[in-house]
Length: 174
Image (tube, rainbow, N blue to C red; front, side, top):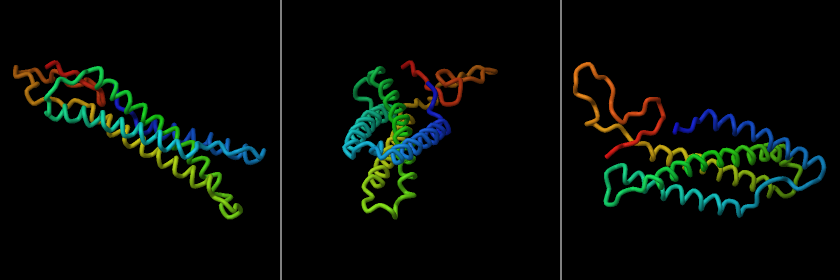
């Protein structure tokens, strides 16, 4: 698997922010409730972030040499997929709520209650935290090249187990 591209995440965030802004403008025009998640969504986001961190730290500890037990390779793969899903979900949540926040910000002085504005800002912050944790845990799941993997025969330049392309994950055949 390849590493998540931060530029792709940025492009998704900008596109979804535009959609969130447009949805907020439309709902304001037709006097419909603003499409923002409730604050209880932060609790769900927190659970996902903590679970991703716990599993990522478990993989990181195994990778760094604290190998009391054998790490289940399926669990490591699930951790990687969870980290990538966390980053993409955080990107969508950040973009959507940032678009709503930008629309609500222009009406800041006209409203007596800025609850929706703060709610959108809090959920956008939660999305940003999900992105950061997802990208960090994704890096935890990378296997560094080993020192003894270099072939000693003259003329052989490659390393066994090293990824062939930048950002790919290697399999260590211990």
